[in-house]
Structures are given as C-alpha cells and as structure tokens.
Length: 153
Image (cartoon, rainbow, N blue to C red; front, side, top):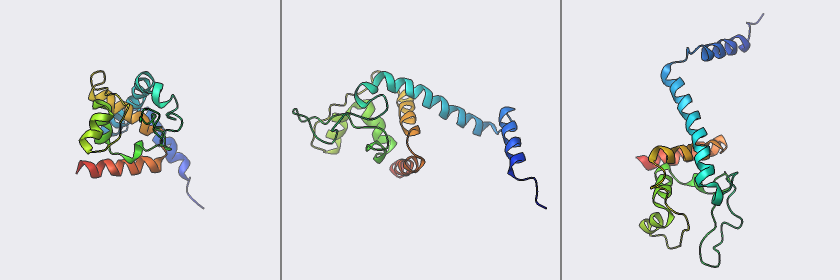
C-alpha cells in the first residue's frame, strides 16, 4: 500500500500560499517580479512597441541595414539577440541609446535606437527588461541570467 501521493501536498502548498504562510521574502519576490512584468509590459507598449513590435517581433529584415545604413529594430523575443547581452549592457542601451553605447564599445555601425534615460528611470527600465525576459523560454532566460551574472563580476 502506498501513501496518499503528491495531491495532498499540492493542496497544502496551495492553501499555505493563499493564506499568506509563505515566507515573506519569497512572497515579496514573487509579487515584485509579477508587478514588474505587468508595469514593464505597459511601458514596453508605450515606448518600445512602435519600433520593436507589439509582440516583440521586431521589424522585417532586421539583420540588414536600410538605405541610410541603419538597422531596423530587432525582435526582443527569443528569435532576436537581446538575450545575448547582459542586463548592464541592455540597461545602458535603453538609457543612453544605441549609438552612445556602440561608440563606447568601438562598434562601427549606426544605431537608430534613441535613449530613454530622460523619460524612464532605472526602475522602469528594469521593469521593461523584466517584461521582455518574462516572454522568453526558460532555457533562454537561464542563459541570459548567466551572462548577466558573469558581467556583474
């Protein structure tokens, strides 16, 4: 004869969550991440979607420069390269704009990405990034988190 199985444990955990019995740091973390992704989505729609797409799909042919030498806005979903960069670089890119960051890096192509540091504070930029990251598959989230951790060292 076997025990009652995992169902009672899941019911207990669900009840504990609903009754507020989770440790406060864990509950606060879950709430903050959810709130950041929600406010980040609204900020993304307001400031980013016109170029990067409502579904984070980017502009067509984003890997090739246009007639003026500017690259179209890339996707921020898993098909793009946003997740290839650490959080510090992404935050800087959003705050100061692409050209300033690329110039500092010695990269020689023109970016049409404006800076949003005068309209979005650090908390709002983080919320936008949290929203974007929340749409990625777990594997890509983990890879990008590793890059961010390595960049912070």
